[in-house]
Image (cartoon, rainbow, N blue to C red; front, side):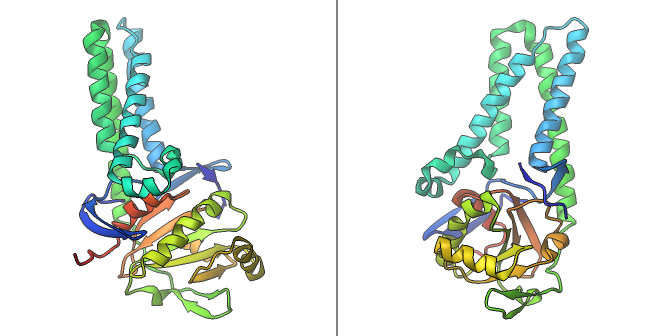
Length: 305
């Protein structure tokens, strides 16, 4: 959940080199490419689809309770909590080398690192255990779980369909770097590229910057671009000097044209562009080393063994 600024990850096996470590694995699903603004807040569609499933499940339980069946509301929340814990644990286990470098980031669920399949299976397991021990809850619990899971799955399928048809190309924009040199964004094609939309006043942007800076040094085969949104060059240079950050490809986007082109509604927003210049994935909010590696699996070419 990030401040509004008004203005997909496959499971295909790839080899990703991150922070000096080579990994070969299926990329878990993390953040998504869309967000919805509600007042000053921005919610990712991953959160919204989860809420949709919860509301559908709880609504089903309420419907059955009014008709004389046992109330399984508390049991549903227990099963949901256990499923989310297992989903997080599975993602952490899948990207353990990255989390080991930042142990506290395991607790930062804002990075969006969850394994949805494990989460659903975990919730099913705990729902089944509760139903086994408390037979009166079985019918309400089973119906609420099925309806909630179907609603959540339908939401994810809708988002996936929209995302598949929205692989935007790089815009025909010309920006300037912090040294005043012109940079034509169309020229970024030919190499997998990560474009981080950020601002010096943005707390999550500042927190994730060391992760992106380290990745830029460790992965020369991927281009990292830092496009400041809406600020003057002097403010950006001053921030980089104060934080002693040595970054390549720092661009100034005073009119926030990239935010408008890609529909970014909050910062940080990180765009993952393939070598053909097409948008393949987006992270809304702060990245950790693990979620960065998972997103890079969408655009990184397999490295030689």
